[in-house]
Every structure is written in structure tokens, then in C-alpha cells.
Image (cartoon, rainbow, N blue to C red; front, side, top):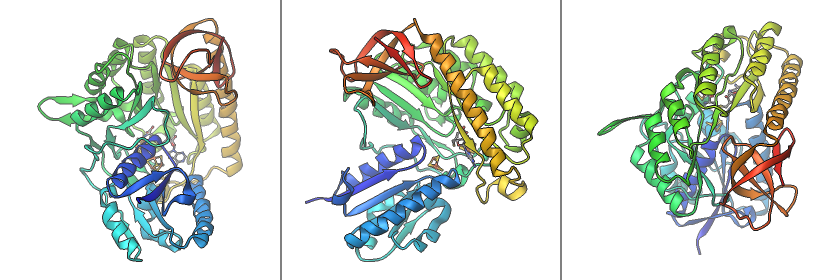
Length: 436
Ligand code: SAH
Ligand code: SF4
Ligand code: F3S
């Protein structure tokens, strides 16, 4: 009988994609992936270091695993991902951990597990300048058979001053385009209808083979696989989102009209301290380009409140920018200092916790209003949606998403997962659209 591994993932979509690569490596090495933790002989926790609370969540989870291990002393626990890379063998202080593996070392898992099986502790946190796991066909975990992620690049070397990713994920490198296109084709043949191309900064994708391929060209090649295959991508960095890319998005119906463009702050002074390499004006120019070239395109963002030295004026600039753009949705966070980053070394984390919280609440309230406004504007309009799940509230309803990435609730009728249907919007909340 095959041994069973249970994989739990925290953090960004890229980490979820990595867990699928890990799943593939494990299934090729006498393991089977299980969704039931109690039947596993091996538990992997794929971790995130982006903010302190992300790491705390994992620490709490490790305590729970300690209890599980008491009941089942044979159980082995591996800590993977960004926390493994950031903290390295310090994590062995958590006694429950048998194995530590960084994001570029997953091919070494079978080897490391041999040592663990002999009762040793094992670690590999070496970062690579080449590893892209390009020919590994991920095992799709926990998904609906309709949407899947494809990693197209790894690492990041933008060194935004607050960010831990360049340290946990290493140098930026792009994956061979042929393997990306093959993976997308295979998914389409298996019935998948939506793929999301992933990278920390997809617009700096670059491959020099027989031809030079940038992200716009790659996106076009993937869009041409089949008009019934929807394409999304994340994340775009404002400093290099080009008009060329926007024109490709506009040209193909199956490239979704939704762009995630994290701004982080509306103040040029703070952006400079963050080392984001653009100003408020540059960002506004890019938003104008999106609105001009792709009418009806949804725009979403990430924002950090309470970064080092942020004044009330800076905060107001973030608020006015949010209003000016009219974001469809946003992910908003309190600044969390990460050791070793430029900000931790050179700047003071000087905004009191209660000020960070109050500013965060203000922007969350504003965003709720903007999302509701944006959804209200859709009432009466018709959209093509791809059905990708059942409603969380009612078994009699299905849910799908439109090109703008908004969730639409529809009656079940004879509709099925993976169908495209065109429907008219009758109502909404700030989070979803509702049709009849
Ligand atoms: N590569 C993407 C972001 C990846 S991290 C980009 O550059 O846009 C996802 C989000 O986490 C970031 O956009 C930022 O808003 C937030 N984030 C990153 N580091 C953070 C920190 N130290 N404290 C709070 N939020 C942070
Ligand atoms: Fe972090 Fe900046 Fe890289 Fe995004 S672009 S992952 S925020 S360093
Ligand atoms: Fe977290 Fe690492 Fe992703 S720090 S956000 S899991 S790249």
C-alpha cells in the first residue's frame, strides 16, 4: 500500500501552485496525496512569511500537530515554503518538525525523506537561479476541475523595502514557454476552462530562445490555444505594465478583463520609501491607459497602511487615489515589519498599532463602498459567466465568474460546472452579483 501525504498550504497563489508541484513529486515517489490528515503518515505545511500574522498562524498549527504526533508517534512533519527559507534550521526548535524544505528544493524531497525515515532530521533550503520545475506536471489539489494555476516564473528581485519575498524566493527567473503552453493545452483537454498565469511580477516575464518572448507575447500564445479557455494573470507590477500588454488583453475575448495592479500607497513620498519605483502620477497614467485601451476592465489592488513615517496626509492621498480609481476590490493590510528587509534595516516602524488599525479600517470601509458602487453599476447589464462552483449559501444555486472576476450567483436549473452562460444581473451585495 502507498504511503499517504497530507499537504496544507498557506500564503499566495504561487504557494498553492507549489503544493501541486510537491504533490506531483510525491506521487512519483510512492506516495499518494490524501485529504484526510488522520490517515497520513506525513504532513507537509507549505508556509508563508509575508506578514507576522501569517507566520503566527503556522506556529499555532504546529502546536496542534504536536498533539496529533503524540497520538501517532510515527507521524512525520515537514515544513515547506517561505518560512522554511526565512527561518531555516531555527524551525527545528519546534520539536514537531522533522523536515525543512525551501521553495527551490522540492526535487530533493525523496532524498530528504530517506534520511527522515531513518530517524534523522533533514533540511534543504538552497535557493536556485534556474529552478522553475518546468517539466513537472502538477497534481491538481483541492480544485473544481474548471480553474487551475500555472506558474510562469519564480522569485522576485524588485526588493520593495517592506517585502520578504526576494529573500524567501530568490532571483527572478522565467519558465520555458513551451512547457507553459503544453501545460495549458493539457488542462484544456482535461476539461479545464480557466487558467491563471502566476508570478510575483508577470509583466517582467522574459525568455530568450529561438524567439524572444515577453509576457504580452506569451499571453497571446496561451490565448490562442482555444477561445473557450479563459486566461487570467497575476500579479502585474505598475512599473512595467505596458500598452503592448493592454492591447493584447483588449484583443482577445478569452483574456479576462480584470487587472490586479497593487498600488501599496497613494503617496509618492511613501512609494519612494517603499522602493516601488513609480510615483502616484505614473500609477494614475497606467490606470488611464487601462481604462482607455480596455473599456469595462475591472481593476483591483493591494494596499499597505501605516508604513514607516506615513502621515495623515499620506494616508489621505491613498484614500483619494482609491476614490479616483474606483477599485472593484482590494486586499488591504497593516504594515508588518519583516527582519532583514531594507525597511527593517533602515527605517523605523514608527506608526502606532492603533493608528495602523484605524487607517486600515478607514480604507476597508471605503473599499466596501466602492465595491458596492461598482456592483450596483452592473445591475441590468448582461455578462458571460463561467460556472465554477456551487453557492456557499444554497445548494440550489451555482456560482460563476464574469470576465471581470466578479462572483455571480445563478439558479441551478440545468446549468453545469464548466458551462458558459450569458445572464442578466438583477441584484448585488458588495461581494457578489445576483442573477435570476
Ligand atoms: N508581487 C506582488 C505582491 C506580493 S505580496 C506585488 O508586488 O504587487 C502580496 C501583498 O502583500 C503585497 O502587494 C503587499 O500589499 C502585501 N505585503 C507585502 N509585504 C508586506 C508587509 N511587510 N506588511 C504588510 N503587507 C505586506
Ligand atoms: Fe515583494 Fe515587491 Fe517583489 Fe512584490 S514586487 S514580491 S511586493 S518585492
Ligand atoms: Fe507568502 Fe511566500 Fe507567497 S511569503 S505571499 S508564500 S511568495
